[in-house]
Image (tube, rainbow, N blue to C red):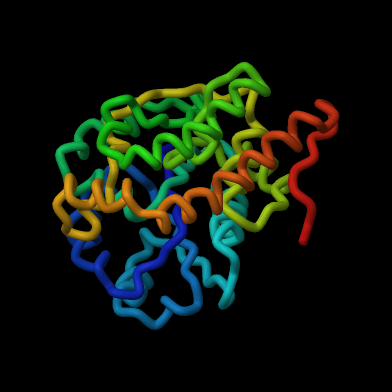
Amino acid sequence: MLPALVTPFHDPAGSMLGIFDEVLPDLKQHFTRMFLGVPAADWQTETVQYLQADDFFTLLHLEHGLPLGDRFASIYRYASSAADPQQVLHLCCLDRLAFVMCTQHREAFLTDVDALRVEDTPLLYHRSKTAWDTHPQNYFTLEGFITSVGETLFGKSLDYAWCHFAVRAGQLREVMALVRNHDLSVLAEILLALHDQVKVKNVDWLAWEDPFIFSRDAAELKYERENSLEEVQKRLAYVLPMVETLVKFAKSDANQPIFGNDR
C-alpha cells in the first residue's frame, strides 16, 4: 500500500497552483492521495477549485479563525480516521513539500519515501547538519533549545518542532485522542506520545525552503532573518509552549501521560 500525504493548506495568493501542475504526476506515482486541511478563507480560491477537481486530493473544510495548532490537529485527526490503519501517513508542510519536489532534493526525498517500510514507523525525519546550515542561525538556536531540553529530560535527542513525520494511521489515531494543545506545541505532543517508539533519520532534503517559496536570494534572506527581532519573537511563540509541554510531560505519571489542558 502506497503512503499518503497529510498537510495543512494555506495559499491565499494562489502561488501553489503552478507547482501542483508540475509535481502532481510524481506525487501520484509515490502516494495514494493527499489530505489537506483548508481554512475557510482559502475555500473559494482558484487553487482549491483545482484541488477539488482531482480525487487525489481529500479536502477538509476548516472553520474560520481556527488556531494554527488546531489546523494541524484537525487534518491529522481526519486523515488518521479516514485512512486504513496500516497506511503510512507522511505528515508534512505544503511549502516544504513544494520546495523538495521542485529542487535538487526531489530524487533523495522520493527514494526515502519508497524505501520506508511500515515496520520502520513512526519515523521522524531530522534536519541533517547540511540542512540546518541552510537555515538562519536563530532558527537553529531556538529550535535546538527544545531538543536540548528534551534530551535533558528524556535522554533522547528529537526535533520536537519537526517538519516531516511518517506514522501509521492507526498509531496517529490513538495519539490524536490525547492531543489537547491549540498552538504548534501539538507537534511536540504527538512526538511525546510515541516517544519510546520513534526512530530518526537525518536528511539533507529538509533544507530551508523560504528562499525558494519567496523567490529570494538565500544569503540575503538568511541575513535578514538572522537580524530580525520579529523573527525571534515569532520563533519563541512556539518554542516556549513546546518547552512547557515537555516539562509537563516529564512531571506527569509515566502510565498516565497528561498533555495540555483544554482551553
